[in-house]
Image (spheres, rainbow, N blue to C red):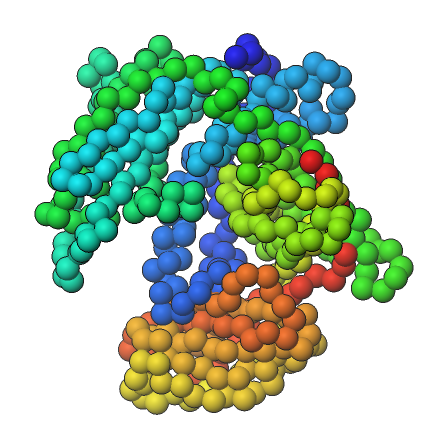
Length: 473
């Protein structure tokens, strides 16, 4: 492996970006209306999302610093800079982009243990100067059955035991996808703190298997893990590439990007079965607050017009405090195409609403999933939003169905006269003008007496323009 890069500039950049925080709570609470699929679960899910964001921000501060450095060095074309870039980044399947400024250790071989027809495999271990990542999976028997009302609780934590007896508990735990392992019942990641670079082995202890009741499977699993220095077969290079589309107005004449929005392809990773594309959307108009714009990949076609399948990927990046930027990533599930590819994006932005409002009068004691037709047209930001109906999802939460023939494809609402329990919205995939969308609002119990007045606070719009990106690997 190449010698690590040492730079005083990198140290200065690190000082500038280590204090990463979330945008103001008021804006985030209203903005989350676009991302909650089921209204009655929105309050709980908002809390969960906030916790995950805080954990991810702590985990990825160093990665953010490295990417800031890259945004500077890509302006240079000297071979020494290109070589430096190659040393900085690497991609590990199921793990993501890692920092290679210091030696990286990986698992020598997967470790498998089978007990009572249950097979558990420690598939990966990646040790960087930031953290230690362990990925394991398990396969349950085909006749494995979990009865109703079974307890899943286990207060004991997994532990990584170093040769000197140091015991590390995981800082982060998360479920991973099993699309490439259809026989796997679960794949799970455990992130520990970084361990000394001279450690060549450790013992992983799992008191029980996540999501399996303790009384239905063996407990106290142990795995002897051995590590080696990673080589080119373990880490895929990350290739830096800046591709910025030139947005145009809906008409034929070129125009400046609306709200100063720019959608950029930053880099890609070449995998055996496809590519992962990483990019960002940024904007300059402060009317769109932090986290207020998103870039959705709608379709990919090759030079012959053939559709290329793709899926979402973890962008592994979060904007700095107050930064008008969001990061995106997509995985292309094919290498069999004729370049160049045309990536068709749809850009969405959240704008403040001018307080258009509507009223409805629920029953004093509504039943869960009781529905009312509202059929009211509301003028919001000089565009008509048709409030079609509302359902009571329980626990004080109402889910409204709305529609607009304009470029409004989502919204957030509040009741100015009553404190909210939470807000939410429905939908998913690429937004389309004219499609119905869900908007939720939760009242603190007991429910206030009707009639109730709901006021628009934000509207989500599709930003006009040609956001296509043409790319060749």
